[in-house]
Length: 99
Image (tube, rainbow, N blue to C red; front, side):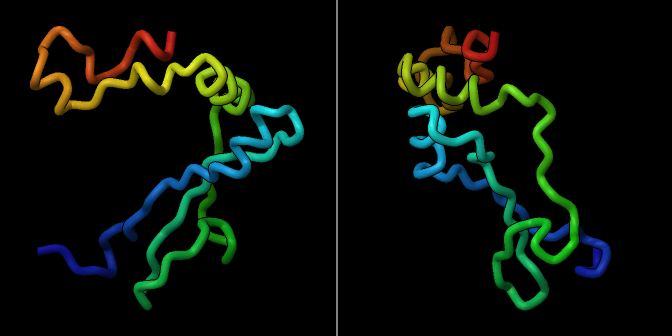
């Protein structure tokens, strides 16, 4: 068994739709993805707000890519694993959307 002291805290990524809309309109360059972690009191806190690790985007063009995907409606082409199980020719890794 693994103790909770050595287990990593649960995490989730949150896409802020308001910020995404501002990025698409060109009125903001703020990050639209935020990382939240669950602390020992079972509360969700934005990572970095207490000096802990933060979500750092590898590519500075992330917002540009997201805005392009929204304006060209590429989000409609996203295939999840369930879609792949229905039709194995569909790529659930969505490699074509990233290239």
